[in-house]
Length: 225
Length: 233
Image (tube, rainbow over all chains, first blue to last red):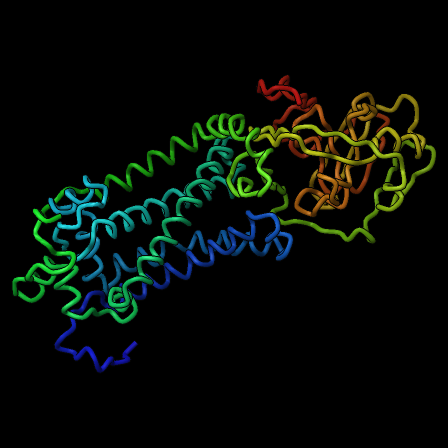
């Protein structure tokens, strides 16, 4: 984690996430990884046949699913919660620029971003919603004895389709991360180069440094967007 | 903090959709099924089979899959018979085969269209052991150690009730109840006991099956039981 890149000296960095947030992201990523892998084995016939051991795979899937809320609760209520709580608030609210971007269905490149891009905000909300819905439907599937049979079919229907949507969203998330090494460093080492923030997150840059961000790529004035 | 709580709306919206899906999803699934099944059957790539439409759901009552190799598999016919018989899988395969292509309808609502089954008529197995005249019916036991089913003698002797060892011209997999399972075409899936191990001819009315003691109908005719109105297969 502490690898210092000589090309970005400490004074040219902005802290983006603290250690607790990085831990939460990567614990979640690991759990989602296990869930997707085990889901694929349970769901795709040829993979099921290849791996076998269905009861073990199912057990892993259920246990990692049930584990999902714990890191979130720890991040939100633990003594290390400060940065996470602030970021959740920033992720939850869409300002005028964000809504302009939303209304243009992502085509308006002229809007000025805060700490989070509205796409990232949507991704965060979607992920939280997914965790809630998958936990609920998964629980009905697992403890089906306690529910009407129609609910079991309905829960399976929701669980399956949402899983497919989730897989697509996560692929998009990874693709975006792969295309931006500086943003990726934000989630692996916790900081981003100040110039990146100035260019891609001008409103956040202004908040953090007190300097005006001159419009650059991704920060062009609205009339040119 | 300025701005609109769009994030909260997204989360609440997803939760609402999720609840609606749980309550009405079985109807939506059925509708989708009718629309997509004819398209999927012409899809040579198998790509559509990745989507959750018209798929088998694998249920086990023990929470785990029990598997038995083809070599170790044995099927016993016992109880009120002249001579108890034990069949190996090869012996089942050597008997006259019955093939049928029928839908598989689950009492929870899902239906898989046009499943090809190959197997031996249950009636033939009963004849081999010499099931005694006037018996009430059969009690069927699974090697999962928990699941049981019953059929009256009249039901058991129907031509569309088979011990299936092939599904879509391939051996029945462990997930689908292999090496051999029952397939009771005119009844809901829970009658088609998986991992079939013992067929016990019963002189008097047998103790009801696993789901029947939990409230399912004993005579599980598709569309005429369990309060459902599915089309017969």
